[in-house]
Amino acid sequence: MCGIAGAINFKLLYPQIDKSMLHRGPDEQHGFMVDNIDMYHLRLSIIDIASGQQPMHLDDRFTIIFNGEIYNFKELKDAHHLSATTSSDTEILLLLYRKYGVDLLQYLDGMFAFAIYDNQEKKLFIARDRAGKKPLYYYTDKEKIVFASELNCLKSLLPLQMDQDNFYHYFRLGSFYGNLTPYKNVAELKAGSFLLIDCTNLDIKEKCWWNITDRYQRPNQDSFAESLEKVDSYLHKAIKNRVQSSDLEVGSFLSGGIDSGLVTAIANQYNSKLKTFTVAFEGTYNEAPLAKLVADKYNTEHTEINISFDNLKNDIEKILCNYGEPFFDSSAIPSYYVSAAAKKHLTVILNGDGADELFGGYRRYVPFATYDFFNANSSIKNIAGFVKKILPVSHDKKSAYNYLYRLASFVSKNNLDIYLSAGVDILEDYESNIIHPPANYMQIIQNDFNKISGTSLSGLQKIMSMDFNATLFSDLLVKMDIANMAHSVEGRSPFLCKDLVNYVPGISDEFKINGGTTKYLLRQLSKKYLPAELVGQPKRGFEVPLKNWVNNELKDIINDYLSTDSSITQQFIQKGFIIDLLNNKLNIPAEKRAKILWSWLSLEIWYKKVYLQ
Image 1 (tube, rainbow, N blue to C red):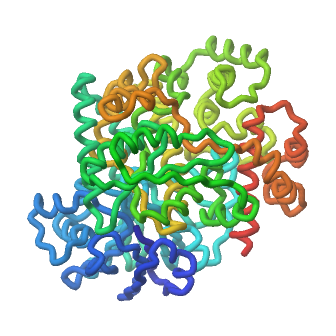
Image 2: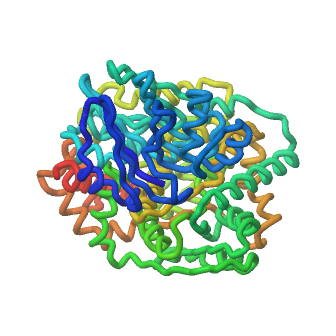
Image 3: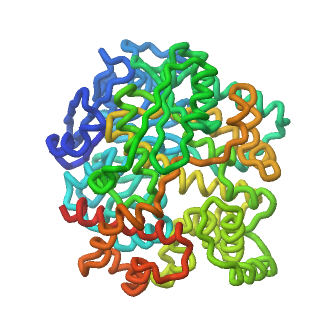
C-alpha cells in the first residue's frame, strides 16, 4: 500500500507531495524524471521490503510506480515463465506489461493503481483494479497532466477551482459519481478502467477493461451445491494469497457478522497464530460477544478494543478533511477510529468488504428479488404513492414499519429516483429545495441507469449492479482506503478477488436472496465454519448514533457552519429549508433529517478547511 504521483509537462514539488500523502508511504520516498515525465512514489513496505523500491525500471525502457498488491504474482511468474530478479509483485507487473501490454490486466488478482512509462514509445499507461480499491485522480488541461492517489495531493500541487455543477450530484447521491470530483479539470479514473496517454501531444484514450454489469449478463447454470463449492474454493484461494503475500504479519478484523467470520475462519487455516481484533463503540450495538465466539472457536490471538466518541467534536474536522472531498458516509468516523486502533496491533488486516454487494447483503434487495421495480407499471406506483401519503412518518430506522415506509416511498417513484430513494435516500422528496439545478444535472448516473434498466437483467441484478458501481466504488471503498491510509494500515478484501467478482454475478438470484433471507449462499457456507449464533445475524455494519450526534454533540458545530451567510450549502439549497431543518420544524423522518444535516456539515468542512485553505 503506497502513494503515487506523476506528471507530464509539469515538475512535481516533492515537499508538497510528502506533506499531503506521507501517511500512504512513510517507509521510503523516491522520484524519477525523464524527458517531460515526473514520477514519484511513497512506499509502505509490505512485500519484498529489501528490494522492492520504486520507481522500478526494466530494460531502460519501462518505469513503474505502483500502489496496491498483486496477490497472485507468484503464480503469474511461473505460469508465464517470467524471469525476475526480485521477490516483488511490482517487477512481475513490468515483466507482464513487456510481454502482453495492456492485456496483462486480465491476469491480475489484486488491488492496484499503477502507471507505467514506456520510454521508447513515449506513452504512459495508467490502470486501476476491477472494483476500484486503490484510488487514482488526474488533472488535465491543454498544457499538462498531473495524477495522484489523493485529491489533497493534487490540491497541494495545483490551483484547483470548484466545479459547481458536480455538487448537485453530491446533494442527491452523497458522493461524486463515476469520474466526477469537486474540481474543474480533475477526474477520477473509474474502476476497471485504464488510460493510454501520448506524452508528446497529451492525447488521452480511456477504456473500460472490466465491468460488473457484463458479468451479470453472463449467467451460469451451476446448481446451488456447485456454486457453494466454487465460492468456498475461490474464497480459500483468495484468503490464502492475501495471508501469504506479505513480509509482514497479516491479521483479521473480526466483527459479529458472517463476512469477517468466514474470512477469519479460513485465514486461520493458513496462519495458526492469527491475530484478530474486534471493536466496540459506546452507545451502539456491541458485537464483541459474537466475535469472541469465532475467536474462541479458532483459538486466535484476539483483542477487544473499546472506543468512545468522546473526542468527536475535536476530531471531526481532521477526519473529514482526510477525504479531500465532501464525504457523506458517517461511518467514516468509526472507520477512522478502528484503523487507528488496528495500527497498534497490525499493519496488514483482512476485512469483509464487498460481500454485501456481491452476495446480496442489504435488506433493500429483498423486494427487488421478487419484482423489477425499475419497470413497475403505473398501477403499482399509484398504490404505493397512496399508501405512503396515509402512513405516518417513520423515525425508527431498524423497525419493520420503517421498512414498509421506505418500500412505499421508492416504489411510488419513477426512473432514477427509484434507485436514489431505495439506496442512500438523502434529499429524496425534498429535491425541490435545490436552487436552480442545471438541466439534466444527474445525466451521468442517469445514462448508466438507463443502460442497466434497459437490459434483460432481473430487478435484483440491476440494483446490485448499480450499487457495485456507485455505493461500493464511490463510497465504501473510498471510506476504508482513506481511513486505513490515514494510519498507514493496509486493508485486504478477499471477497473482491478476481475469481469471485467474475463468478458470483452469474449465479442464480435465489442463491443471493432466498425468500426474505439475504446473502443466502454465504449463510449456508457459514454453517460449515461458524458458530450457529452468527449464521442468522442481520447486516449491521458500523451502527453510528447519527441522530444523537446531530441533536447533541455536533448540534452547535452544525448550526455554526450552516446558519452563517458564508455557508456554501446556501448557494445550493433554499435557506428557509435549511433553517427549518436545523430547528426541526419539518415532518421528516429523524434518520433522514440527520443524514441531510450530516451531508451538509461534511460539505461545509471540506469547503472551509480544504478548498479555501
